[in-house]
Each structure stands twice: as structure tokens, then as C-alpha cells.
Length: 351
Image (tube, rainbow, N blue to C red; front, side, top):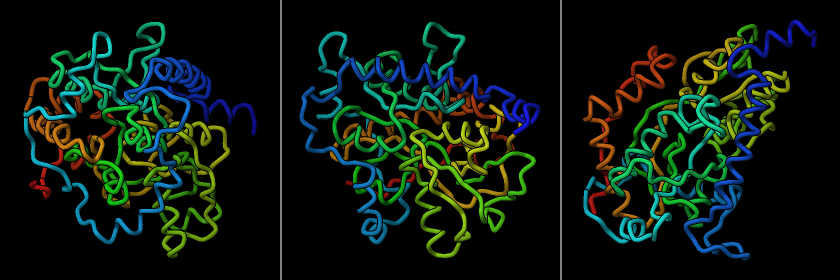
């Protein structure tokens, strides 16, 4: 690759130098938060509830048969405390915090601002929602212990008790509902293709033939590609073997020329395009997906409380959903009308 071409590929906030710095910060932060302890007791043995990302995929086919409209499979809102919320409130002293799994590498969703302190302050749309939940439950928006977790560890982190919640652009789907509970949806998006502007790739179609595509491990994007390649909906020659712990790593692989395209949620892909002006979204979204807050399956009172927070968040015109969207996402998402407003909740589970 010629030096001039390489420099052009690395323009923008998302250049490899900036990404390397961000990844270094991510490692420091991940080590720091991991060493502070987990919600469950620390021990050498692996917790009984631990399941790897590979094991989690075993239930996918079985779950699909019993699940319709996964974004509606949640409980109606309530302000009442129950066992899960009481346990959070009864944590002693400095441990009286909401422990939340987040991303710190998704620009405008959950990321570290390198200009805000020694390690950078976590900011973004998901982070605003976390502070809102903490304020409602504990009376303090900053009563949060953030834990950076990779994409394929979101469900194990909940099951093992390492976190109370995951707020990390996590799609609600039938397979995941076998393992965790979700709130009502707080954002609507869909899978899209991201590629260099000069690329012949046109979207999720035959132009991906003989191309290398990157996705995050444990993501709905990879599951979709795998399914479509088997069914013939994606060219058989499309190479989907490149998977990474976090979706931002795919942008770096794309910048380095190691892959030809990235498949990701359109909401995240739009933010990546904002980081690097040499790439763009190709074609339309080819799925419909909803982000939700994930929790343990038996934490019904916490699910109901988070759903109440989401009701309030939507209705608050001053500092709620719309204000957060305008601050973080409108610059890249305003051309998508369905994304510029919160999805309406619908609660199928009544008990």
C-alpha cells in the first residue's frame, strides 16, 4: 500500500493512531474496573452460571420457535422495589453503586473522551441512560461502577453476577431472551454495511462476493451473515471468518486494509463513519433491531423499574431521550427518521 494511500485511509478521529491510543486507554480501564471486584463474591472457581459465547448459541434455534416480537417480551413499568433493587440499595459504603456493563469504544454511544481527565470520561447516549437509571434507583446519577465488557461477554457478565445491567447497544432477540431479561426497547436500528467510499461494495448483496467482512464476536451481525451464507442469501464466497472482541476493532481492520467491509448495526456504523471520513454506509439496512437494557432473568423488579425509567426518559423533553439523541446522534442519524425518535413500548409479559 503506497504511503499516500495509507495516509488517506487513516484520516479522521478514527485513524489508527487515535484508535491505538483509545485501545490503550481501554486496556487500562478494563484492568482497573475488573480489579475493583464483581457483584458476586470473588473466587478462583468459575461461577456456576458462566456460559461462553459459543455455548450461548446452542439455544438459538430452540428459542426462535417459541418467541415472537422479542422487543415486546418484557414486563410493564413499576416504581416498586423488590429483591434485586433492595440488594443494590443495601450495598455497604462505597460499594453502594449500580454496576453496569458498557462499551468504551463506541463513538457517541459509550466512549472515552481523551480530553476529559487522565483516563477520559465515559460519554455517549448509552452512558446518559445509565446515569438516569442510577439516579432513579440510588438518588445519585454518578453512583455507578462501569465495567467495560466485550461484545461476546455481555450475557456471561449478567449471568455470573459481575454486573446488574448491560447498557451496550445490545439487540433484543429471541436467542438472548433464553438467557437474560430485557427492558422495553430504547432505540431502533438495523444491520448495514460499512466500506471505504472508493470500494466497489454497494451493500448487502452480490458485491460482497470474494470479499472479507468483519463482525464482532457474539453479535447479531455475525449470526445474520452465517445464516444467510448457509441459506444462499449471501454469496458463498464471502469470507466472514474475521471476528473481533469489539466492533471498533473492525474499523481498524478496515483502515489497515485487512478486510473489505464491516457489517454492524447501522447506528454504530454511522458513528464509525463519523470517525473516519474515508468510509461510508453502503446500501440500506437489511434487518430491524431494537436495543434494550439486559438484566438477569429473575430480576423482575429491576426490569419493571428500568422500564419505568425509560417511560420517564422518553417523556422528559428537557434532559431525556430526545435531548440525548440531539447531543450525541443527530449529526449522523438524522437522515434515518425511524431512529430519530424513541420506539414506542409494548409490554407482552403482563405477570
